[in-house]
Image (cartoon, rainbow, N blue to C red; front, top):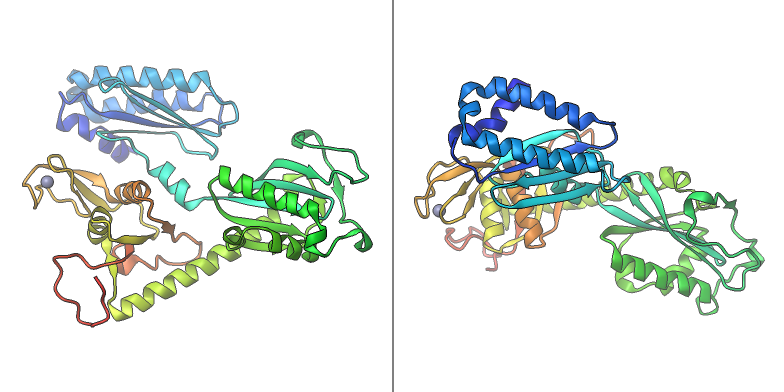
Length: 398
Ligand SMILES: [Zn+2]
């Protein structure tokens, strides 16, 4: 682990008077006091790696101040439900930013001129949430699934149903009922005001969340009726549907939900890779590798970014003009400014997020990286780079 410590203090060694850096801390909140112990060990390793150079540096004072800020945040545990915590601190810049994370992270500290956001960005793109409705014509329960972990959001009950009214007490009610008997079920959508209520609730919930798709569970007649009632755009986002017995217990859904999500993702990856292969064959509107992808993103040409399993593509950032490169260049070819090394994957994810370009992380297990021949990352683009030679085929539209 010496290598890691060395890498992490590099910026301090390069510019011992540079005080304007950010400490990014990721804390595993599932282990009591684990982060405190990690920080102790980190400081010892770092002192060993950096030796006198760092101890003498001005920057060391700032590091201590930033770590004090971070430890205070971690110990305060503002959000007891958080499984992880990301804290970004730069005393010199007046930056103190805390992000509670609903996913577990490993304890980790990174010193850099910009916040280290890769774990958050990868989670954002790689582990999206899904909205789930389990319903029949009398009751409905909405859940959301973070990867393989469904949570109950709200319950709806048909107003005239001959059952006690129940809502908003997910943790304390455990009910498992099978769907109403067939003669009670309403098959005609027009006669199903309750399903309309469910459709409205789904639309409302969809608007509030950032969901990759919708999962419908229940009897197939009810699902069919509901799909006629939900908005077209929402219907297009249905990831899958499956028969399921009534329950308010999120754990009972895990198996079906992960199966539907995995099938859907596999099919989506298959379609995306088929399109990519088609474009590769025709040499048509693909940016290959980190340099071309960053160019496409910065020039507003990217339509969709695909990232394989590589997480550490070396890149560079011009300190003068701000241009970002997918290779470790030392001097900016545009303005001759000095460049510093960055992780190109983080830059690609950041730019994609800023410009709202969809990103697909091709991470399904048991498969070699399909993007390896292209340097680990590609983008489908709407136009070639404007300085590129005229395309070989005539089909290209700029
Ligand atoms: Zn430059």
